[in-house]
Length: 119
Image 1 (cartoon, helix red, strand yellow):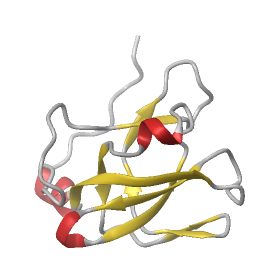
Image 2 (cartoon, rainbow, N blue to C red):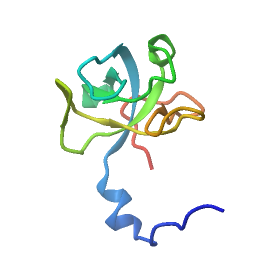
Image 3 (cartoon, rainbow, N blue to C red):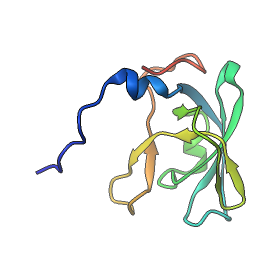
Image 4 (cartoon, rainbow, N blue to C red):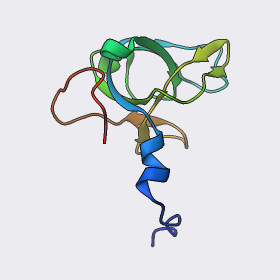
């Protein structure tokens, strides 16, 4: 049986605070300074610019990630991961069969406009 869900919250007090936008991965390279295996991603968010993210998406190859549309949280404070300033959090879900924290990015079924608001 699944674990208990978190308490019910009001969308205006939670989800509405996040600036979730659609981007496209332009580059993905291993980030050797990260504490665990990770890639440094360069992601284009259209009119919101290109941002760097460090994430544990190593269940895919860099070639599989490049060109993929992903969902990012643009208004989280930057976070230092290893020697890199990670400017955006790319959303993902646990990659089946890999260690905890290894993720596959959330992607739209149909390609959409870069920078598009996720709701």
